[in-house]
Image (cartoon, rainbow, N blue to C red; front, side, top):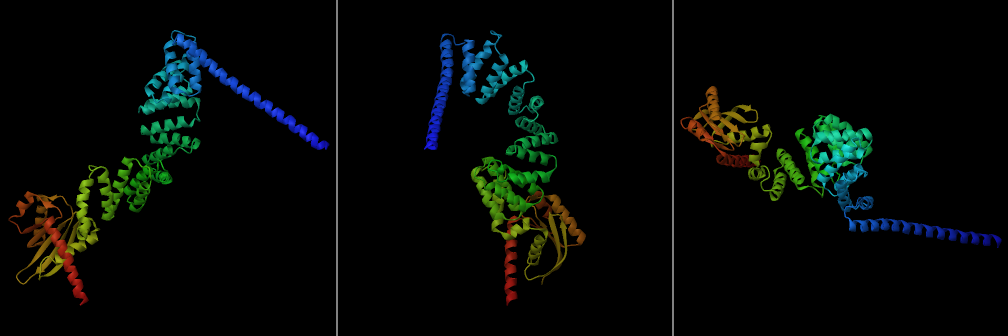
Length: 455
């Protein structure tokens, strides 16, 4: 019984102590609330009699600032800045600094700047003042000035991540990429969750010709919900320029899978992916993307022209080969056209000469029941207008090989000068309309030959 009684007594005493402590804590809290309310009540009473009472304004401003009521804090400290010349005992530095901080919180950079400049004139080496002036100059795109202020802030606190970040980003904007690299890396070491700085670091590596390091960072950022679309666009563009189409497609497709994409990034991701698809001759996929872009912005870059051009190509496989296929496939198609150009003729191709990716010249011996001769075919790949100079060059080549006739073929058109030049010469001009008929005939002839072979 004695142990039980002792335990009960201890429990009772403990309860009394806890209740007493809670009561004191409660009373203390009420006392603190009453203290704040008393200060505000007295300040408001004075301000009712004199709206520019410095003591009342200081008391109220301090409470507004501590409670982060930024609009009231700003108006209070703004009034106090006007009184500092009348009351020299007031802390002019603190008043201006707090006025600037409240203005920044209210997104009023001009008023913030004025207050911080005044504060800096009083205390030139103050860390917080220099840091905030650096931030404001960065917003104003005055990057040289931003660097100066951030450097002064760094002297007071070398390990302050936002200062290092601001300094690095300002140097990047000034295209001082190697200097920016050092500070951004230090900022990331202190604040590794800063994805925007990771992105800028990758840009620095790219500008410093350290492409592999840039691609590694962009690859890590591709799935980030905020920076991911931008990282995919940058990474894909690098891979596209380095002739890595598969990697570029992967980048752009990952970027397009993001849910939250800025319209300007979305449209450019689609445009560049369409560009890669066109180079890979995946015209159907490219056209789908180009139509999506046209729905968003009908006048975006050359989208309208690309749709007009590639819709026809998508429906004509031979025209795709003629314009876009590798050289070997292009030459194979040219051979089919030459061998089927004259009906009921014996045709033998004796020479093929290629001028880069601009045109191919095929020389053929043609033997019909009525005539025999050497005929030169020039297949031009570009879709622009063919001028007189190209036709003149073709005519000179005919003379060199002693060809009796020339056939000049283009998927575009011939200029009036080119047409006039060939009027008195044995050169036939085949433009886009006539070429389409030749391409269709080549398919028909190939089908007939395949059917004959089966028989």
